[in-house]
Length: 467
Image 1 (cartoon, one colour):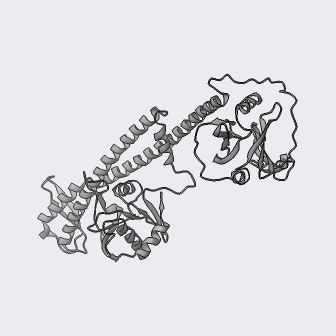
Image 2 (cartoon, rainbow, N blue to C red; image 1 turned 180 degrees about the vertical axis):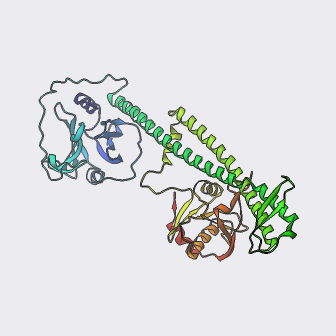
Image 3 (cartoon, rainbow, N blue to C red; image 1 turned 90 degrees about the vertical axis):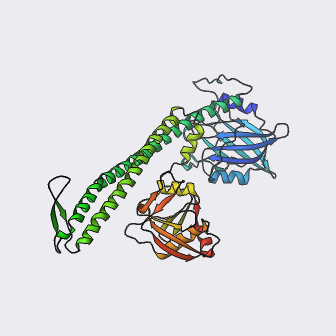
């Protein structure tokens, strides 16, 4: 926090008098950069931060990030003081406050800066008679609101505590203050980014471990697929012994040397019972293979994830750019969930649109569940369209047509008047081992032939958001 002597030194080094305010950039609710121009100094920047633990002002060379939202006070400043010239600078005696007198179109305004701790911190725009026109923080109980007359109570001395200027290095106190607080800001940013990265790491690891447990359960459920084949082979060799209406049959088991009971469905024929056993064997075998492949992939991804965050967090300063990128991907509470590609609403359903192999792969790996629907053009390479499922709701034809139009648009069939598509649930997709990124094989698919509707596609894309 600055003291009144440091405020005075900073002001004395600044070419405020005679400068013109050309631009005001808001960084957040508490900080601004004033772009100024003075005949001898030319263009220069003044950074101001109010009502934070690091409240200060100084000349700066740093270009700080612009805020995405413009607050009421910033809008007022931009409307009323841009283009104004600074005709006078006055620091209140023994005070961490100063006033800039501004002239614009023969109108005189005052801009008051108070670098206090607590509720006194503020920036105010006053008229010639010290009536408040607008201010950063409205505090009616202190008579600090538009229309109130601001009463100054000049201090007569420092009080009991004697202040001094901190020792500094370099050509100016402004440059030292800028470096000093930039270092504090950087460390605070690093601490915040590390905290975010740790939260994200823990969340991703927890989710990956959940998927691993699910894959292990499916692996265990299907691991006896060879037993299904054994029972089917055993029944096949004694199929002539099955009589209509039997609910089970006990046969000599040549593998175990004992007896084995095989349950039967009495409502169907012997051949149909046999076909069911072989079908169960094929299903369990496929499920086991897929679960095993997925389990190996997930375990590898988990190790890579742990290694990535271990390296990232071991040297946060060296990895600052990666930490920032990692933080940008965080989903804040209250924000919509983000996805690769496009997200488009179709009625009550959400469509996720992958426009290339990378987005296809990312969506399938991280943003789909087994009951979601996958739509793709047949015989043409292209993007995947995922229809997010909803509990106890079937996908209406209009939503399926919307998904089909988008699948055509982001495929090599986009110039065709008519296209064939197929769709299935995500749980019926299987990745091609060692195949290209995003490549999958579909089973239990349904076919669809549609004529391309350019107007429908255009309306869908107008609603789309890139996330």
